[in-house]
Structures are given as C-alpha cells and as structure tokens.
Image (cartoon, rainbow, N blue to C red; front, side):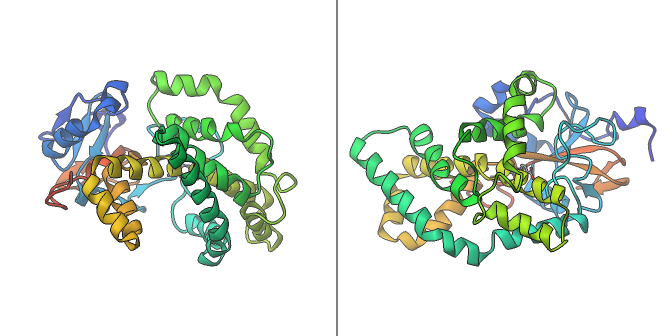
Length: 334
Ligand code: 8QM
C-alpha cells in the first residue's frame, strides 16, 4: 500500500491529462475529448481530480466485472465515502457491493419483473400513442421538452404510486443526484443550494403511507412485510426508483429521437420494420450514453491495462467514451 502522498501521483509512464470531464466546456462537445482520453492510453491520470480514468471499452468492462476490487460502497462519484460523509444515506443498490447489493437488488427485480412490466404495458402504450398523436398534430415540437421530458412523467409516477401533488420535484431531484456525483464545481454547488425542497418531497414519497397501495412502491414495501428488508430499507429502494428512473428515461428517449432525427435512413429503416425498435433504442443509448460516467474506488493495489493503481484510488469510467471505442466497434460513431 502506498502512503497517502504517493497515491496522489501516478506511477511513472502513466499518461497524465489536464482534461476536466466535468466542465461545462467539455459537456458542450465531449466526443473529441473522449477520443483523446481513449487514445492517450488504457488508463489515464486526471490531474485536476487526482484520480484515474478509463475511456476504453475493455478496461471499463474489466472494472465493472470486478466489484471486489473496484467497489461502489465508497461512492460512485468523486467523493470517497471513507473520507467524506455522503450527502444522503447511501443507495442500497448503487452504492453497495455484492453480496449486500444483490439482496436489495432482488427486491427491486421483483417489483420490476416481466410480469409487472406486462401489467403496465397497455397503459404505457396508450399514453405513448396519445402523446405521439398530439405532437404529430403540432407538426413541429421540441423533442426534449415536449416529448422526452413529458412521456416519463405521463406514466412513471402513477406506476410507482406517487401522490399527484409535487411531481414537479422529480426531474430537479434527479438532476441533483447526478450533479452531486461530480467534483465541487459550480454545477455541484448549484445542486446543493437548491436541493432541500426536492429532497424533502422525495423522502415523503418513499413512505408506505404516502404510496398508492397498488403501485411499484407498495410492492417494494411488501418485501418489508415479509421481513426481507426493513421499512427504512424499503424507503431507500423506492428512493432509488425516484433517483434513477426519470432522468435516465428522459435521456434515453431523447437520445433515440436525437439519433433518428440525424439519421433519416435509419429512421426510414425502423419505420419499415418496427420490430427493430429495441435494437434502435439500444444503439441510441450506446451512441449517447444517458449515464456518462461513474467512479469506482479500489479496495487493493491492482493493475489495470498494465497500469498499477494503489488501494483507495478513485477510478473514473467514461462510459460514453467506452461506448464509442473503435477497438470494440469498427464504426463506433455510426
Ligand atoms: C444512476 O439508487 C440510486 O439512488 C441510483 C441508482 C442509479 C443511478 C442513480 C441513483 C444510474 C442512473
């Protein structure tokens, strides 16, 4: 194990980058920066954050496949929960490792099972068709504000069983959660400054008394009745749905429309064969990666892509860069 001081510098020969993958400038046009980070090496040292970064598909897969070495329980943002207190009680699925992760995940899996999805399908399809018909009548619409942000709100809150009151907190809450993963920059400070009312509303929504008795939230609380999780754990699992279910859906739907609008031949091919919808959506989330980055924290000294990484290091996975790695897909941008 290295001394704290040594851990703040990479081993000799590790490419060093001054790129800031959390700056507004970077977000404006991430793809050239992603390419630069991929080409710099299998593992890069980000001097701005004193952390490692992996932008290639192979290394990102290796990290994701080895939670014992690259753990989530010390936080999947830049902040190391072993050094800094988390801003909210850690998520039981996102910020846990096996085997604790799997116990919580099993409860969520049941609440989100194929059977449950089938029971929601008709309502979800009806809402999609109604929205599409309305937007088609308009002739011209904003694909994000008028569709990607609207559709999840038409179906998900009712499916979870949230109260009608206060649903406008959902997207700001999700934005807060995502911005809090980042470094102490203006985005994170702005998130901190405005989060209180959203956090308060979400906490109330997670309670069994608030949730409708026939929704996904109630199904999670049923696992507490069985003694599988505690009441408090059930509330945290509902919180996971409210943290991760909306924003990612907005970005997934947005990505799909963005890609189809810019690739008219692909749009025509999809219209000619709608059974390709699932593949088209998968390809859209590969190209646009609704979740762009997560960190892991090393639990031991390890070698990744030939690079030695000490215990207790934060390692940034650039999922959006890995998803366009030409080593994995020869025409990754297409
Ligand atoms: C990101 O459990 C949670 O609170 C949570 C889980 C996943 C995310 C964010 C929060 C992947 C969408």
